[in-house]
Amino acid sequence: MGGGFGVVPVVPVVPVVPVVPVVPVVPVVPGRPPRPPAPPCSPPAPPAGPAVLTARPARGSRRRLVHAGRMRLADIVIPETPAARAALEVATEYCSPALLNHSVRAYLWAAAYGAMNGIAFDAELLYVSAMLHDIGLVQEFDSHTVPFEEAGGHVAWVFGAGAGWPVARRRRAAEVIVRHMWDEVDVEADPEGHLLELSTGLDISGRRPEAFPAELRAEVLGRHPRLGIGEEFTACIKDQAARKPDSLAGGFVRNGIAGRIAANPLDR
Picture (tube, one colour):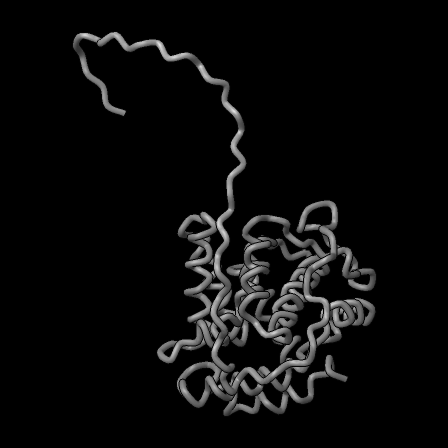
């Protein structure tokens, strides 16, 4: 606001008109144009099962240790923040039903494992990273120059900017997504990356199912069914490996990930 000194002119007095609240008119936005046919890595999926997170947050801190044998879906803390809701909306819009449910389960396995093992984690950061960790596999965000996990990290950075996150938090989301493809992530250095790497390893290739109670596994899979994620992800990872052979996806394919995916006990 500027200002100055001098003679103040006399302004005629205008009668005060009562202010009437104005209801904003929301413009009608034309629908998005039809998408082109999905690439080979996204075969048609079966009809979607329920994918919206309905488990309510457990009371108390995310640091609360829940006895592994008693862990249930209702005990898992689901962050109810604008950023978390927006991340789920993005994943719902762009991911196939199978990939969406995989992203939801990735968070649930990760948060459950953290609660059962006393690992303190940022629930919102982990949730947003889980929802976006495979966004680089979908045709709208697929990159022909960088690995899909790096492409997903860039999407998360931009998402975080739109959510009003500081730069450091945007970078953390990108790091967590990139590191979910690592063989191992140090829990002390990056608890969210550690949990997402562990949970995606379980959901895709069936690593360490014994770390989760059978009742919890049944609840999660019943609420968010797999919908053929094994076959879809195998096609995706092979496509990534063929186009980017030097990526981690390329190494995974050469080391037999397709066989591990096919043998995942969660599909039995």
